[in-house]
Amino acid sequence: MAHFPKPAAGSWTENWPELGTAPVDYTDSIDPEHWKLEQQAIFRKCWLNVGRVERLPKVGSYFTREMPSVGPGTSIIIVKDKDGVVRSFYNLCRHRGNKLVWNDYPGEEVSGACRQFTCKYHAWRYALNGDLTFIQQEDEFFDVDKADYGLKPVRCEVWEGFIFVNFDDDAEPLIDYLGDFAKGLEGYPFHEMTEVYSYRSEIRANWKLFIDAFTEFYHAPVLHMKQAVKEEAEKLAKIGFEALHYDIKGQHSMISSWGGMSPPKDESMVKPIERILHSGLFGPWDRPDIKGVAADELPPAINPSRQPFWGQDSFEFFPNFTLLIWAPGWYLTYHYWPTGVDTHIFEASLYFVPPKNTRQRLSQELAAVTFKEYALQDANTLEATQTQVGTRAVTEFPLCDQEVLLRHLHHTAHRYVDEYKEANGLTKAATNGSTAHV
Image 1 (cartoon, helix red, strand yellow):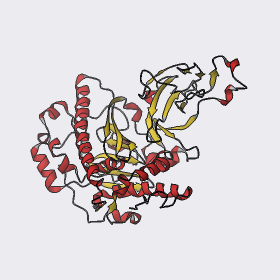
Image 2 (tube, rainbow, N blue to C red; image 1 turned 120 degrees about the vertical axis):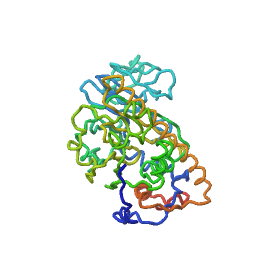
Image 3 (tube, helix red, strand yellow; image 1 turned 90 degrees about the vertical axis):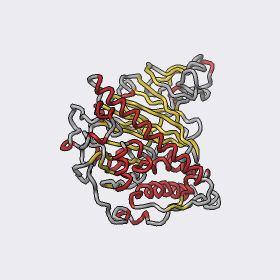
Image 4 (cartoon, helix red, strand yellow; image 1 turned 60 degrees about the vertical axis):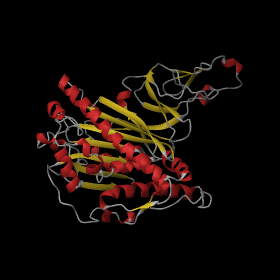
C-alpha cells in the first residue's frame, strides 16, 4: 500500500479563505425553520438529478419521481416523447388535480411505456409532449380550449445521459450550472455502464450530515476498520488517511483519493472471497474492455493531480448529487432527498459495464453487497450524530483540513438561504433567527 505524507495544517483550507477556519455551526441541520427555507431557496431553485436516459429506452418510456424535497406531495413524470426529447411534467391532471400516473398505490413511483397518458378519474388524455388531446364529454364544459390545459411542464435538461429537472423557470441552463467540473467530465463512457445495482434507505438524519460523511476520509480508518483484513485495518488506523486532491468551483466540489487500485498491490491484504472474485469494496479489479477508462483516456477533470496511485474521484454537485468515478472502470451515484429537517431518503446506484460471464457478474454482485454494508455503517453513525446535535448542548464543532468540503457545503447552503431571504424581504425575526452562519 502506498503511503502519502501528511500535508501541513491549512494546506487545503487556506486556498478558500472565504470558508474560514473557525468551528462550524450545525444549527442548520436541526432547525425546522431553516429547513423550510432550504426547501424554497435550494431544492426549488437548483438543478436536481432524477435519473439516467437508459430508463427511457424508447418513445413513450416514462418513470415518475416523488419529490418531497421540493414540497409535500410533489410528483413528476419524466418521459421520452415521439421526437426523442426527454420531458418532465407535474404528475397532475388539469381537470380536477388527480394524480395522473400511478398504479395500485398513489405514493409509489412507477415506470413503463405508453402512447399517451390517461387520467384514471375522468379519462382526460394527454400526448407525450404534454398536450391535452381528449376531454370526456367535452361539450359539457364551458368555453374550454384544450390548448390551455396541457400538462404543466417542469424544466428538464440532459447532461452526459443524466436527466436533471429544475422547478425554477428562471434558472440558468444546466450546463452553466454544473460548471467546469461537468465540462471536464464530458466524454467519460457513462453510456457503456448500464448494469445497475440500486439501494434506497430512509435515514433519520439531516441531508447535509450524510453528505458530510462522504466528503472526507478522516473517518475511514476508524469507522470502516472491519471492511479490511486485520493487518490492513491496523495500518490505516495508525497512519490515517489523506486524500490526494480537493477542489471547489462555485457551489460544487470534488475530492480525489488513492484506493481502488486494480488489482491491489498486495493481494494477501484482502479477504479470500475478494481474491477469488477479483472484487471488493472498491469494485471489480478487472477493467472492462471499453474505450475511455484507461489512465491515458480519462477526461481532464478525473484525477486532476495526475497521481499514479489514483483510485477514485468524488464530485459533489450541489445540492444533493454525488458522482464517484473509480479507477477500475465503473461509477457510483448518491442522492440525498430531504423529507424534513432530520430525515431524508438516501439513494445509491452502482453502474458497471454489463458482465460477459458468470465470474464478472459475481464480481459486480460482491462489490454491490460490500458497498451496502459500508454505506449502512455511515448511516447508522449519522443517525447517532443527529440525535446529539439535536439536543443543542453543543452546536459548533471544529473541522480539520481534511474536512474542507464540509465547510464548503454548509457555507454554500447558507448562502442560498441568505440570498433567498434577501430577495424575499425576510428578516431574521421573521424566520425565528434561523440564520446561523458558518
